[in-house]
Length: 319
Image 1 (tube, rainbow, N blue to C red):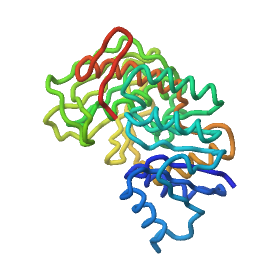
Image 2 (cartoon, one colour):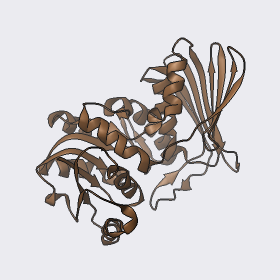
Image 3 (cartoon, helix red, strand yellow):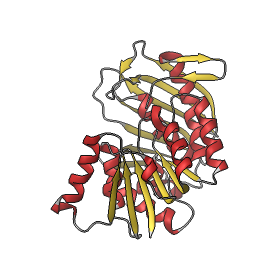
Image 4 (cartoon, rainbow, N blue to C red):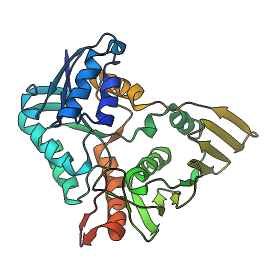
């Protein structure tokens, strides 16, 4: 029986729970959240006749009640709590796999501390930037292995760069087959916005840089209602993807064509990722070190506009 824990039972944590119960592995699930309302929502899910047959699910207020060995832990808290949670977890349990939500941390010094804890305790750590799990992008990478990705552009109206741009930078890393961000440039709109999550900030504007031979631009257009589109210029073709509409167009090599796809919900992915991890040693998500290579440059860019930067130390209240 695999022992699995979810730390944080807010909306995202509950989507992970809905996914875990669909895993093909034998599980006992432990859910931790300090807030009574969140714990009650989990208990309502367990009691609902629509939930069907469920594995054993235990709900706790603190991590102290967790078993001494955990095969998988998903940390679905906000960024300002995440390092504290990791420190608590390694103090109460031996952990095999750890899945962290993004934005990882809003203090640059916490990345190294987390890496030390992960290495010291022999944990395999992953970050939930799941576009590299989406079949549309996995298939595209296979189909274009012999064609150089030259330019990657994402743009859309009024979406939060702080919270979400790391998803697309991670996708560039995946499609380009490289990790390091170079020549990062940021042009943000002047006024900092309040995030939809209380106490956090958001930005619109543009981030550009390079990953390997690929130049990327990620843009949020203030005041626009344009849906997000992804445009990929290769050496011999151009691919345009409208994620919201589930449509892909290909122009160039071999003629033009169009196809449709469907992006999975988090509640449809978590069980698959859990099965990958519990039945082997890897999964489709981003390894922690590779994700840090995207997170840290972005954090410094955001902090220059909406936080503080002092030498090698950056802080910005994003999640």
